[in-house]
Length: 194
Length: 194
DNA sequence: TTCTTTATTGACTCGTCAATCAAGAAAAAC
DNA sequence: GTTTTTCTTGATTGACGAGTCAATAAAGAA
Image (cartoon, rainbow over all chains, first blue to last red; front, side):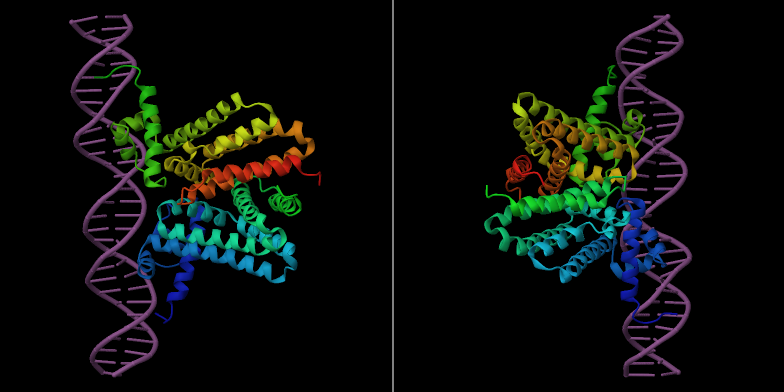
């Protein structure tokens, strides 16, 4: 019963299944067969639509990044003022959806992949640049020349706390991470020029 | 020509070879055979001394953590004053030896492993606790109640900047990371109580 | 209708790898 | 000098997995 136009549906199902499977296994030692089974099709079909395991991973990574980007954009839409927008960016990184085990697993494994896969590295770069430029856009009007350093520190703290929070088995207070970054934001904005 | 007392030598060689191999491959998809070959022995011998792949990884992780711990201890030995000790701790995390590709690869993969391996998770916890308590020891006398939050932020920033720096293909300025953490330290120490 | 395109899979190939084991060889113990 | 312990490996097993392919089936085009 081949209905036409299945490609986008199958691809989306495979991407979702890939992220879920990485989350379930914890690493990239996932089999195409299992991903395909999870997505309700044969492994041959997965190969047919993606060509190979690597490209499935890349698509999953792209999806994760896109999802994060959309969350930031949504948060920015309703935020008011530079300060409000900065807080929105920070909050978006620590949404509960970002702390789903499969999302954490995806990020960690993408970091590993970025070491050796130029494509993965490029995607990660895009995320980093977007975060940096988002921060700069609202920091520069507030603190001028100090914005560059402040953005580097804020981005670093966001990534670092996400890493720590994501690996922490106690799901205590994802709000703590947010609070810490906001605290840094306060000192960066209010601090006397060094 | 079986000389006696080979066990510690073989184990050390295997641990070293494991880290190098992980660095060369970039992920944990390394074979016991290749590790053993790199260490100059048969794969059977690797199994003989370690029992299995997992235990080899654990030993490699333990070694990496131990090495980091030793570096911190050395740095603290000559540091003077609370402020000097805090700077020493920060510097130790960004030593050039920590930015060898195989060390970066080891850390990233240990993060991945920590999701699913209770042993790996435990080891990572030890690292995190040690860093936290090292920071607290010198922060508390300086800023009292604010030490807890400051330690969390400093530790987060150290991890985050290490991650970013380690993944950055340009090896520009490992000193930038240090400078950023020191800058945070400055604001944490000098900031007015919130 | 016949042909082409799209969708789909089971079966198969080819390779890899963790783990085991039997056996050899040298040192130490008795 | 025999026995035991330590060290070592080649060969083997058993399993698993990526990617291919031929074949089937339906939908649309000619």
